[in-house]
Image (cartoon, rainbow, N blue to C red; front, side, top):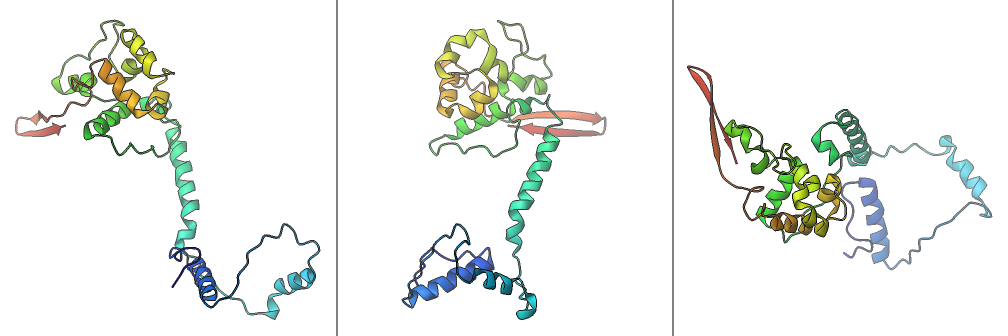
Length: 226
C-alpha cells in the first residue's frame, strides 16, 4: 500500500480515516485534486447547501469521538502559563537571570564530550567545585583576588577584570543569559580553557565527596556528592 501523504496519523482517528480514504481512492486510480477557495462569492448553489448543512432535522447527528491527543496542545499551554506565573514570583533567584522565560534548552552538539556537558550544566545552575566546595568543607566562601568579592560563576563569566581581555575575544556581550544561552558553546569551553579553569577541572571536577552529619549521639546521615 502506498501512502500519498505518508503513513496515517494514529494519534487522531479522524485524520487517520481521512488519510486512509484518500489512499484508497488514490490506489484505485482516482485523480484527487486539492484546491483552496478564498471565499464563497460566486459559487452556484452555496446558499442552498449552507442552509441544508445548518438544518439538523434533515440528517441524523453523527457523534465523532475526539481523541485525547487533540487536547494536548491546550493542556501544555495552560501548564506552561501557570509555570511561568509561578516562576515570575522569584525575580531575585539567580537562575531567573538566565531563564526569565520557561522554555526548553537547545540540545548540545553531538560532538560534545561528557566533560563539556557536565561543565555547561554546572555553569547553568551556578554551582561548581571552584565556587561551592566550601559548603561541604565548612570553609568560608572563596573570594576573588582582584575584586575582593565572593567568587561566583556569574563573576567569572561576566565581570572579573582579570579575564576581561579573554572575555572580549569569545563573547560580544557580557550578560550572563547571553553567554550561556546564545553564545556558541564552543566559545564558552574555549574561554574556560584560556583562563585555565577547564583544564584544571575547577569547574567540572569529578569525584566523590562523602560528608557525615551527626544528628544526635545515636543517629547520623551520610551525604555523597559528585
